[in-house]
Image 1 (cartoon, rainbow, N blue to C red):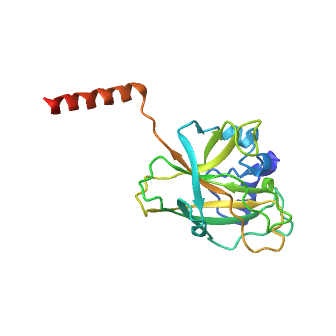
Image 2 (cartoon, helix red, strand yellow; image 1 turned 180 degrees about the vertical axis):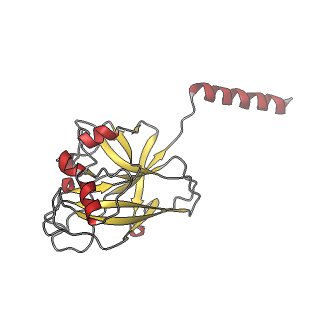
Image 3 (cartoon, helix red, strand yellow; image 1 turned 60 degrees about the vertical axis):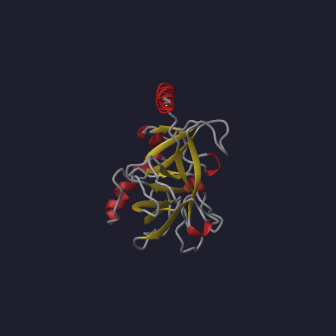
Length: 224
């Protein structure tokens, strides 16, 4: 399957479909469609960029109707390419614009928009999560030691690093959705599950100690 995927760039070029910079599509082959397969040669070749610890938390992100903390809307940039018989060698290709708005009410810094699972594919009886992929320029791969649906091993997610965003700020980017099977007659391109990965910086013990000393000195100064 990896060989077939590596040929997708050549297919896209031959068809005149614009391709993201990395041109490495990743399919939601994680258990139950949660994330990617950590053993996928493409995942291994790209390498893990971040390993989650206790300072990282997933919060809601998605369409405005879902009342998420981070609002995300998607739209097609052009008519998708739909081959007669979609497959990994010749998938449906759709260039999608993502518009992300900071609706948290706080400044976002060092956060990521994460593609968590293969989306709600109930409307696509023939499409399974492992046949649904995304191609993200400058993708960030994030590893979680264990997660829902894959308790026996790590989950690997793809993500986009968000810039510093003031409340109400908007950022846009383009990625490509790939579908290696038919859409069962639907005209709507599916979207993966989304979440925002929030990073809470925990002060180093030494830094925390210095902060306490500084506060103590300030209090003594005021008393004198």
